[in-house]
Image (spheres, rainbow, N blue to C red):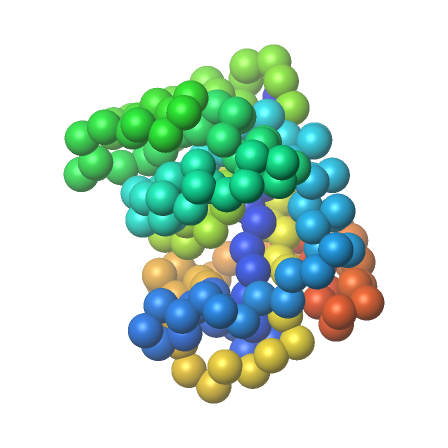
Amino acid sequence: MRTLYAFEMITLDGYYAGPNDEFDWPLVDDEFNDWSVAQLDRTDTLLFGRVTYLGMSAYWPTAPADDPTAQRMNSYPKVVVSRTLDKAEWNNSRLIKDDVAAEITALKNQPGKDIAVFGSFDLTVNLLDLGLVDEVRLMINPLVLGAGKPLFGTAGKRIGLTLKDTKPFASGNVLLTYTPTH
């Protein structure tokens, strides 16, 4: 079975965005970019909720063609979970509207590399609740926003996690990898 992981960028105080959806704070440098490409090389399918999909599909096709992250983001198969989106037009995208648990379980049972959820915070919480997330990867940025949108703000209940790995970056970012304790 393939690993489904959720990768989230958050601040030290647990926000994924500022109060007005600001996302101008992540520390991205060469070390982060190299790590990101290596993570994508172990991945072959991207899973998004509607809001993140719309943002990603507006950005990545316009990124420089020689950007190794853009090459992967634009070419990999993408699965969008949305009840309201009518179509998914970004290259290699398909839409899931119903029976999300069965569709994602079937996707995990197909041969291939890892499946990544980038952002898609409500989707991540829902997939955790369904027991479908195998790893939660949190890139903690050394910044306190003081206000914003909390990563697990829609959870509504406790979500147990066990620390699997840590990786510090020279920038001060720290990657924490957890496995859910279902």
